[in-house]
Length: 142
Image (cartoon, rainbow, N blue to C red; front, side, top):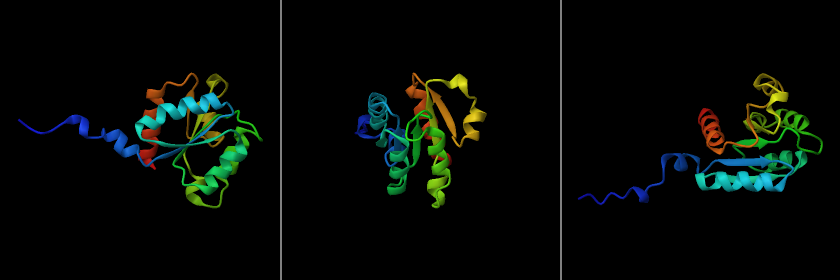
């Protein structure tokens, strides 16, 4: 009989994601908390921001791997926030993957989100299984 116990090994996904840092940016704390509570059990480390200024500041001061950003975030707004990120002098930070987390996906197509500087988008209510797959795919390619 083997001593192998499956529960002693982390799933490959958690092992791959355990060092990935996700910045969750939404002006509603409950949304940030829900996303954090869904991502952290999968091995992600999370930071939170409630406005565009905090997003830019957090990216400047930390090594963030991916940003989940509500395009309607305040101070000044999501489009300006993405523009500020994309114009950062540090190349890695300027090219950080950004996923729009939107309650109104029909207002913009993927092509329009990409034109604004987003890499992808996810609809609210969030399908966390799909979001985690999307994050995993984006992190693998970066």
